[in-house]
Length: 424
Image (tube, helix red, strand yellow):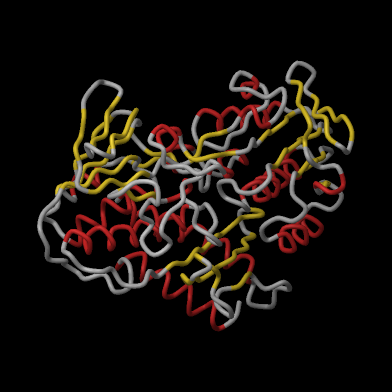
């Protein structure tokens, strides 16, 4: 870890508690009505920081679920060293902050009338709208796969019942069986997520079913933190994990849930447990509202995350086209603070300052082996790009400082910090 990266981690931790750099403690301006669709990392952060900046604003969050279950740390539920309850967060903290939380599903957005319609027929008008719908899974992107097929070949890419299903399948898998993970092409939610999953599943199998193997069929030729992950697989689980790149036949051509087989350029493989992570796109409401581009994601102004498709609308989190920023909880949290600052400024008739954007991504290989990557971003005529000589990844060769164990501790503390910032 370089000095620059240590400084970034310290700054990031402070920013999580204080908000966007340059954001006033109490912005002054005319009151307005803010409606936010989605109470995940992006939506809930935006709500909290808008209300914190200007308590006079009327802030309403629309969320279809009673509680939010995070995808970060869901891999650890699959591996058996976390419980789903550990990842489940109520919205009581938002309510205590003076934010209205409405249970319901947004079904339509009328940008001319500035209103959001819910499935129960009710409508919510807004002065500014934030859409944070996360991702939808494109089941048709994998021939033979479907929502029904996911009951045999779980995706577990939305935390909840699918997470528990994959855990049960792993527990029932015979020693000597093969776990197959099918990874999608970019972009998708949490770029390192499939490889962290491989790692913690390997840890579980090594501990409980050591004769088993893991096969990764990947549509990509490279992946996030690849060198760190592959070095860990060799050192911690020698001979257990085989990764096939897209150029070598790793791209999945079809799946057959009945025979539990996966066909790719590499051949036809049978698995005892098959985890299919399909391609993804912006959540359905973004499509219904006409906020997406031809690529299935929402184009935004990189300075403010204002939609380029509709006035007075902002898109935050996984659904947004955010240049070099990955689709992650950390990115969404940072973006939510930028959006909050932009909204408060716009209602006060001010121009928001330049955004402070960063991402921190921790992954566990085992409960005591952590790795990470951090990046700082800048906005230019090229959009959101990484800042040269800022950020970095974990050291390739650990020293006597026992960095891997320290980073495992940082992983746990990062989760406590960010979830407290968003929902507590």
